[in-house]
Image (tube, rainbow, N blue to C red; front, side):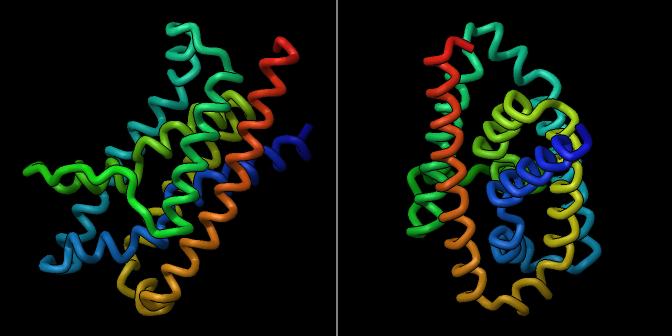
Length: 199
């Protein structure tokens, strides 16, 4: 049982880490806060992490309830989630952008930092799929670990960006995109199997 939980935790953590893309977010975070001193940047980041955490925990707690309310099966959502992951993976591999949200005059800690940068649609979809696939405990622990990872990496984004460099960050993002695409196929296959087996 412990081995299964550890395996599910690792899979959940990796899937979330790839989708949240903290390393790829580091240069974006820096560009959004380039005119701020370190204290103001960290204050803004802490607020964004808090809001994003609330969204993620809400989807862990209520995601499956929302599915049940709309009559959506786990298999349906696994396929839908897999397709979302597939698009995200293609975006990351080829550097494409299927959607370009308009800039809005909001507190940037909430938009675009908390969402969609940290907890965007892809992350929230991932949360629901992981909860349905691996259970609440593994997903909850993986989410907490990823939130801490995001805080650590973005909090030290100046050093992360310098260490990887622009080309290094782009290369890593593309490698993660390939892994995410493979995970997408896995979720779609699991969803299709679930539907045809009647579970």
